[in-house]
Structures are given as structure tokens and as C-alpha cells.
Image (cartoon, rainbow, N blue to C red; front, top):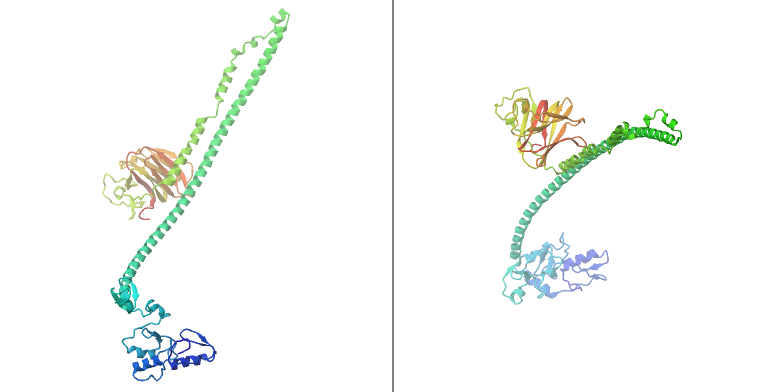
Length: 502
């Protein structure tokens, strides 16, 4: 036993102290108390007698029967703890304790005080299920836990581990569900970012086009004002010249009359020639021309300017359609309406003119030539759909009522009062309804077109999907039947973009 009160086997403590001779600093292997010089060792006869009683004969290598925390014979310190003896033992010295059923072995702890009852200072061996507390034998027999239901620590620990495993499995399941939700949220976030980016690009292009159109409108209005101002200036200048001439003539007549009136010789007055031109000016014929000129030169032609400014209403309507459309609409072509010279793709998105007869059955709903309409009809809402053309320069896109003729020239979209179309022919664009063409002055560089429908407002608009998007034309009508998308192809192909197949 060292002066600090800790007990060790004689062989082990001597070897430990021998290893500390080189440093000259000696410490207790248990509490690390330092000693000045090599500490003297004292025998603990009580522990020696206990060990001899356990072994039956004196232990040749042990003076006390208690192994040190760090045994020099062991490759690792404190490999097992004997709770009954409250000591950390190496494998060699542990063999003695393994033979005793009274000794409870566990892995070594950094602090044995945590394993003792704070009241009775005895080892905690039981678990009170009623108070959920670890207790010693004295607590269960005479302490506050007397009469309570208790279990061995191992059994209680296994039960708790079972509950923890159930909780663990539930937590794993919840974690997996949460990870799936996180993935869904991330996916939605990604789509929201993509949508916001697309909307930003679309709105930027839209307002760029609006600014271009407003600038063009401003130039046209200012040009009209300037034209009218020049025309008015010319008229007023001509009027000023006439009035100046009339004024000079009046002054001349006034002076002549004054001269005649001031003459005293009656003979001279009566003999004055050319007095007929001194008649009353009210009787002259030039006043009518002057009055007509004054009437013609009035205010600026407000009706013309107002008509040009009315374009602002269309621009505002385009803004509304461009931002608040619900689409893109899912448009699928109806093979049952496709003419036999029109090939329909498997995804029902592309119509292609074909020289080969498709040999589909002739029915009342099938177009005779070059056309096809969508299976879906629109009776409300705001939608848009995009198309892309290729091949020939001849095609039409638009919308029609289901009651449109399927035979003859009048069946082509735009050639009747049941359809509206954007038409391309020989690189010239026009819009067509009821057989009447309105040519579009601007050239279109893009082969993509957007069709926008506002059913309740009765507006069908066409846009060129160039950069920026350009408004081409808006039909205004009162729609009374479902509207179907319609395509006309001639040596060309039209593909519907967007929807389920894209």
C-alpha cells in the first residue's frame, strides 16, 4: 500500500516504480499523486489474508491480492474491472476473480464512483422499474425503494435496448420519409427556380417587344401630328397671303374714297373714272374662298390620332395575355380528322404533308385535303400553344369550330366564318378569317409561332417566337362553340411543342 492509500500487488508496483526510476518522478498508478523520491511500500495484511483464503495457498507473485490499474505484465491497461473488489485487473490476475461467482465483472470505467450508490456507497446492481433508477442492494431492502419492483441491471438494460431499437427503427423510417420529402421539396424548389427563370426571360422579352411597339407607336403618332401641322401651316400661309392682298386692296379703296370725299369740286367727283371697284366689300366673291379656307384649317385631326393611340389598348391586352396565360395547353391531334395526305406522328404532335395516301376510312369528320384538327376543344379560360414549321413555305395554323366544313375550298381554316388562321405563303404572312386576308407588313425570321386564346374575352392572338417575342395580330370575336386547334400543311411539316410528349 502506498501513502495515498491505494493497494497493489507487490510485483506489479515494483515494476512500475522501476520504470519511473529514469525520470525520477514517482506517481501512484491509481490517483497519480506524486512522491518525492521512491515511495516506501507498506503491507496490507487484511487484503493479503483475503487473497490467501480465496486461493487456499499464498500467491507467489502477489503481496496483497489486488492488481494495479496499470499492470506491467499486461499489453493493455485495465482490461477488466471486478466490481466486487473495485479493482482494474490484467488478464493474468483476472483468472482468480473469474473463479468466484460473487464477483461481477464489467469493462473498466474512468470513475467507479459513478457505479456506487450515492447514499450507501455500494455498487449499483439493480434497477427500480417504478422510479426508473439504478439502486444498490441496500436501497431495495431498506431504503426508499423498499418493496418496489426491481430487476437486474443487465435485464433492465436489455429491455431498454429493445425499446430503443423500436424507437431507432421508427426514427430510421421517419428519416427516410423526411429525406424523400426533402428531395421533393428540392425538386419543387428546382422547378420553381426554372419556372421563375423562364418567366423572367419571357417577361423580359415581352416588355422589350412592348417598348419597341410603344416606340413605334410614338413615332407614328408624332409623325401624324407633324404631317397635320405642316398641312395646316401651308393652308394658313396661303390664307395669310390672301388676307394680306385683301387688306391692301381695302386700304387702297379707303384712301381713294377719302380723297373723293375731300374734293370740293363736284365736277371732278362725278367725272372720276373706275369707281365700280369701290363697291361694298361684302359683295365681293373672294370672301367665300377665305371662309372655306378658315373652315378647313381647324384643329388637328383628333380622330386619326385617337385611332393610332387606340393601339395602346391592344398592347395592354397583349401584356395581360402574355403574363396570365394558363398554358401551355396540351394539344393532341385527332387522327380521325386528318386528311389522307397528312401523316400524323405516333405522339400525335406532328402533322406532315405526304404524297402517299394513308388509306384511312372516309368519314364525315375527316378533312378531304391537307388539314387536321385537335381532339381537345376549349370553351373557357386562357391558353397558349406553340408550333414549329419546317419544309415548304406554305402552311396555316389557327383554330376552328367543330362544325367547320370538311370538303371543298371553304373547308380550309380562315376561308370560312368558323375558323381563324395565320397563313404563310411564299414567305408572305397574313391572317385570314371568312375568306378575307389581312397582310402583315413585317417579315418574320422565326419558324416558331405562339397562338394565344382568351375565350371569354373573345381574343385569338398570334406571336412570332423570335427574340424578343413579336405580336403579329389579334382577332376579336364572340366565340359561341368549342375552339379546336387546326393545322394546314402543304409540302411542309408542323410540330406542336410542349404538352405531355415533350
